[in-house]
Length: 205
Image 1: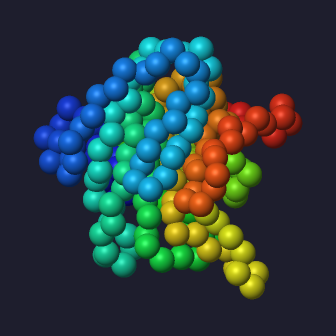
Image 2: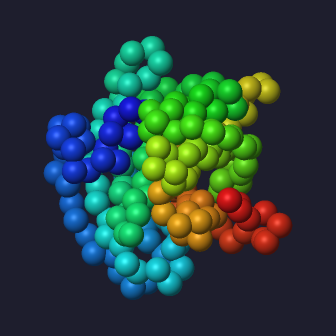
């Protein structure tokens, strides 16, 4: 998780040292919906009429609690403020408990030196998620959400192999649009379907 946060500081030598793949720069199309490929997964999101951003891709190491290192594939959405989508495939199913997911969120915000951290249970793409908000040293708000796109029930226990981390320093409006539209297509699915939330189901910050 620290690697993902350090990558947020793209001008730093540490952030550049974490890059393990060629960084690709793509000018965002005028079309509202974007579909990007992160490893074996297609990720779709919709930022409405906002077109003032570019997309960059990289891979960074991701250290787990047991010390093993996995690769996170990251999409940076660079506009007035940074947004990030990162997928980490652990290779084997893990118990995707709410406490584990909450620890991942608070760890991300703590590594960003946030204070006054608050976490909330929400749904992203119809899957359970944890949303966290923290106050940066600058006084600005950093948002982080984590969920498991492939979460499934096995005898009453939820398991997931892939976690999706979303972080945003952007405006409330753009952050809400990202959280409410993101969809991770799993291998074997015929097509990714952009989910349209009802007003009562929408995530609001």
